[in-house]
Image 1 (cartoon, rainbow over the protein chains, first blue to last red):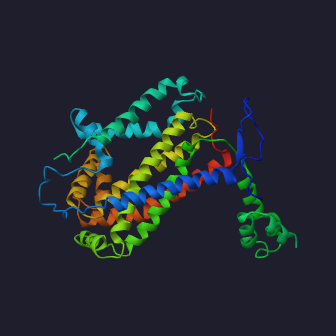
Image 2: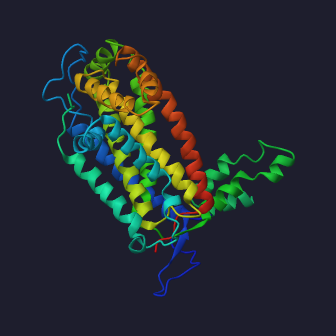
Image 3: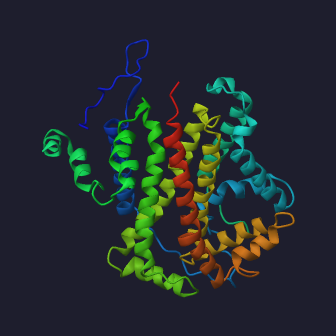
Length: 144
Length: 236
């Protein structure tokens, strides 16, 4: 089994381009290149931005005004500030979204692969992803 | 002779497989039925659709998970999951353990990278519509992996026992506790009591280094088995 990239042409598009290729070496090499890139980025970030260590936790003290929330919690904190009333509404809302996310294939059984033909599911999903992305950029403190 | 010629003409992988082939170790009817080399060759030669660079994000997420496992094991050599040893041992790792600061920072950035790559992977699957039949079960497994990844961040953040991590943990476990009916019981299970204390660190540590990795590995095996069975989604 010699490494021969782009030699096993089984299917071709109308323009004569290759539509399929073997898993090895083509796809494996591509993934390896991306993995090396990711490794380089992480090593560079680790070397340039060493992780600082905050003060030891004191459960008896009140949170200082500048105490930053964990970044992954930012969407939930922003959501709890938008949704009125009790926090139970926020957690139920998040749980419903999580269930809808997991069971997405049951909601959309259209069979269309084009996103333009799945607007009923695509628009709320993409808006939610946009909300998540934007809320991560907002500087959020821990709610007191 | 035939094998030697094949090794001479073949590539690196073929030579390697020739060396590590299990033929000879397994004898009897099993050898005739199970050909590991043949199965591996078939898997590697299997034609896949010409996919874009976006298809690599699942592979990067797996790679980052392996980095997390390796650096996490190194951190475990020094870390003690209790109050106040948790903070003291992290100080030791950061300041005195050989390359401790580096492995801790890699663990941090790879965790963030894992969330980002899994999110991009999910977004790509959604845009391509690859969550529909016959890949609906794989979406279910993959979306569970997405939440497990978030679970790693949530549990791992408290482990250094810092002021900001403490208040973040208090906030999100309070939020979980406000879930109707089962919320309070689940909050007690997570915290190991009414408040976030040293026993919460121990619990989060167990979730972080045992519960979540075991579940993640299990779901990853199912995920990749299904990908192998159904193939990569065809680009449109």
